[in-house]
Length: 280
Image (cartoon, rainbow, N blue to C red; front, top):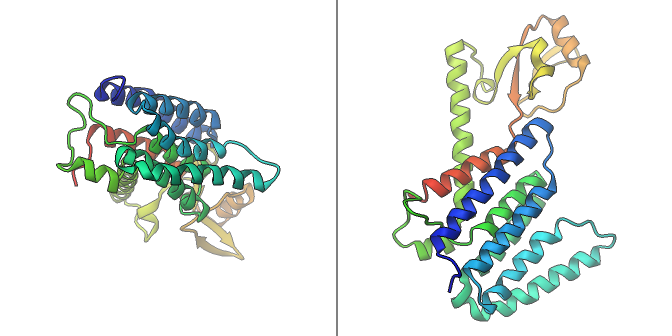
């Protein structure tokens, strides 16, 4: 039995997590770096909320593999066998807790999500470690779909089943992708209004004066290679020499992609998941 009303715990989760995610987004955008302490500290809050909601010993045992996997990633071990030993411990506790799956199913799913997110990062589907940590923090923070007062607006009819088959962290990912799509549509319409047309660059970037490239957080999409003008759909860091060549080539305005960290979309997805909910 929860030590506090679930609605109160969910509201606290949202109010505590939001400043952490906003600061992480700001830090990643301005500095291209997120301190690991953000996720480390928020993880402590997430564990505290989980214990408040699931205070019985069986649930705490089922929660511990997720905690182990979550915090193991914050340390650099001199020997790989240390990591393997920690993974083995988490797996052993997880297998033990399976016999109580009917009583702590959300915490079982939480561990599966932790492993799944780590696997996505290992496969470079989620490229940034900070992005993977952010998603793991969401999984640890919200094992069940939230419900506090009149939020979220939409809640599935069979929420007990949906939150196990489509966990909250998946909902956050879905909204993150939606937020990214909205931004790309905004970029497209702005290009159309400005008369900046080109395929496919008008769908993924915009044009700015050449002398502003180094003053903004953008990827330069254009280069001069062997005297030829080349457009990069997946640009990388540029040099002053690249800008000089473009100026000599006569390019006053160039196509760029904004350096928008994925954690910004995750933050937007988190807010939408908490307030709008699952309308599928």
